[in-house]
Image (cartoon, rainbow, N blue to C red):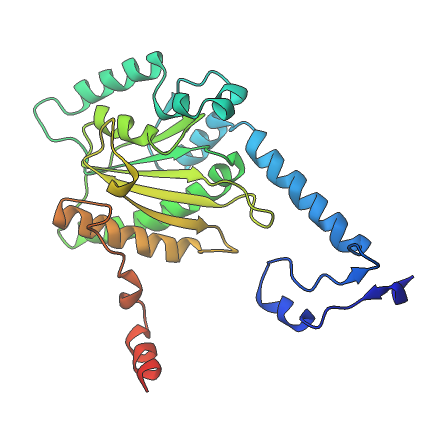
Length: 272
């Protein structure tokens, strides 16, 4: 039966990408092995979308690593409503709004709110939030601690774990907590090779009604994509310059790669 499979001449390129290329051909269809692999990846992507986030377990992990946490939920009462009604995922439930309002009032009476609040939301992949958020936050914390040691301290609010969350939910959370910046760490729409990819959306002066042009995005955070250290480097760069400029979005460019070791040498070689 193996003689019936026609190999693809691009097979040598498969070592450089996770994309489905050079799968071969059996008659006018795919060979069995890549077909089964595709079906498995499709099932994993569907599971990522429908799997609920174990918010309490994630909060325990975060608190065990030294992060203070809060738990909230969007106005979407369950996963079915969340998927059918994106608007519900963009605003807090009444109970969560009241709770955060109380926290915001009592935590900074007579003093400024936090410089940054990190929100971890399930989004379209609870797998991503559960797997990638803690290592990324730990990598970012190292950089923020270094800033504090150098006299450029950050007031960091509690990590807010949000269920049934869309990106814009972070705006309301940041506004209620009086934060200058909100960073929403959220599960991205699963691909057929990446069911656990995390996105980071950074917004200055968060408030209800912010639009996407007011945000910066870091995408594909996962060991097989943008590793934690690289994502933390980019996020710290954007946080630093957002605070300096008082803005995010189209007015804030990500030039963080220029600060990486060897970046100037690579530019010199390219220019030759």
